Length: 342
Image (cartoon, rainbow, N blue to C red; front, side, top):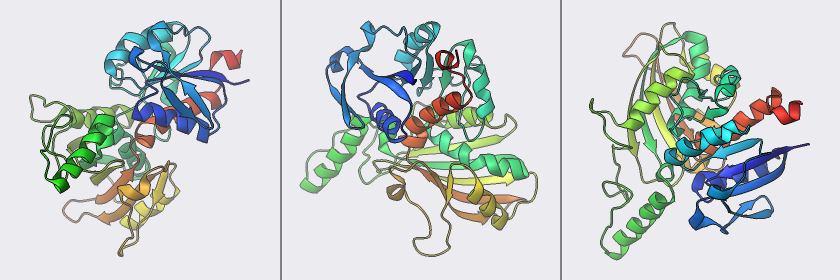
């Protein structure tokens, strides 16, 4: 007997990826329903070899649904996730709506799987920000080994993190530059083609952006509230795949060779670290992969017990859809879906 699953926001980048990963990983679902806004009703989306027609979220009856993968934005999630949870389904939400709510677990299965036990308070589990997810997967085994004091991270985030319109804007601007057309800016504040933009989400009073704040707050909630973290988040003209340059200061000594060995054995990590041409991973190579790739592990000689590394992951997968489905698999393995446990 399998689960009844609904994917909300099935026509978006992450929603489509969720359907693809459910099929790829042979997730035990007896029924999968694609849900979207009224304007997308009837639109077809792929689920393995099947084609699903989107149904209207507003009119859908969630009675009997076990799992809802929510990828429709914060506004929709704030309205619908509590309603759905109250009917008995578990909602795994990809938006920022519930991440810092103390009643809602914020989970990366390789990092804090035991936090899933708190899901029953609202029947909602939050997925972290895409840039946070890959970072904490890489930090967790190093923190266990030598205790992290401080992290400085600069991100190089692909346009897919801002949605399909952002991907289209990179494409149209790139084409416009080659044919000498006007550059139109709608998804981004500045030209993204052949450029980088140090601005993701809104600015806060202290000068950081909300994206940068999310990385700090979410890392503390997921990994350790004692960790100090500062981030600079940058949008780059890459379609898929987030990259991060990470500098870590530890309480205890940890050599680069020890760190490499730890990362080589860590869950969810693929270490590709040869000190030669092409001995590292870039976003192009990570697309479609489940792993978080780590390269260029080296000692930082400017601080005591410091290391630096390069981290790359498919943001639509580990940064969003894959992590949500791994949370659902974690719940299955622990027998937490009530209908199956009955």
